[in-house]
Length: 77
Picture 1: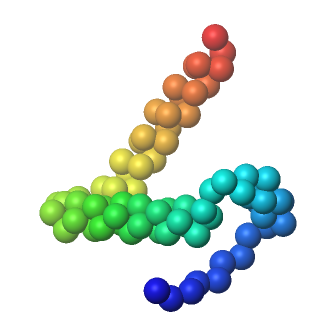
Picture 2: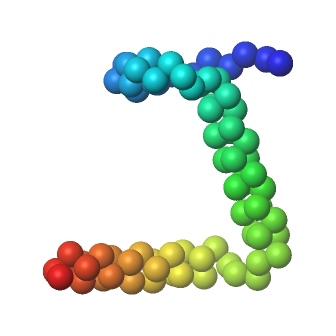
C-alpha cells in the first residue's frame, strides 16, 4: 500500500481528533473509492448518451431554475 498526504484545515483536524474512534485513513479510502465509482458510473452513462454538451448545459440550467423556484416557494410557506 502506498501513502498519500492530504491537506485539511486546522478546524477539521481538531474535530477529527475529537472522535478518535474512527480510522480516518479508512474513511478517506472509502471516500476515494466512492468518488471513483461515481465517476465510473457517470463515464459509462456519458458513453451511451446522445446528448450534446449544449443539451446537457440547457437541461442543467432548467433543473437549476426549477429547484430555485421550489426552494423559494418552500421558504415562503
